[in-house]
Amino acid sequence: MATGGMDPADLIVEVTETAATADLQRTQRILWDLHRKGIRVAIDDFGTGSSSLSRLKDLPVDILKIDRSFVMGLPGERAAESMTAAMIELAQGLGMVSLAEGIETSEQRAFLTERGCVLGQGFHFTKPVTARDFAARYARRSRAEPRGGAVVRKLRRAASDR
Image (cartoon, rainbow, N blue to C red; front, side, top):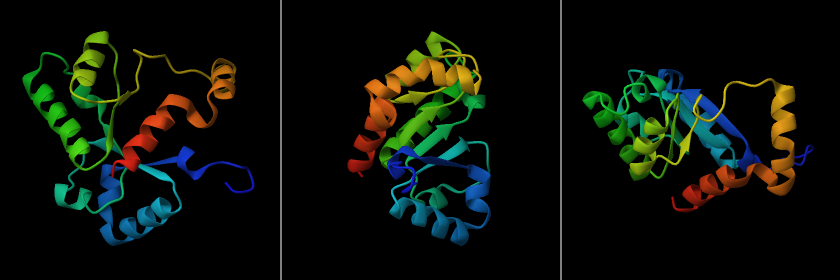
């Protein structure tokens, strides 16, 4: 990162919930080392593993990624609504940013944003693109907004609130 001039805060390492809790002491050491270097950590597929919530509070996590299996039932499926709202509130309470995976409709996006989920990904925003198409599409934005633009600003603001 230093030789490439990359800001560590622009790097996000994703760890699945299951992997993060498999060997808790080792995971804590590694994630705290990344955290001290300024690298952001995301817990992926949250809600699908068998981890304990008490373990989550001991990890330096910046982003809690809500698994698409919960988002698929939004809005309208009572259990999915309740669980997703609880995960968003949990992330907020622990000083994390919530990110919902698998957003496919404007109704899902509205449900999530109304409850405080500030980041999302899914077909609602764009279909998968090749690396070449991505570079062509976002090169203009990266020159106008260096280091990740609005998303990085949100993550930095959330981290400073910790």
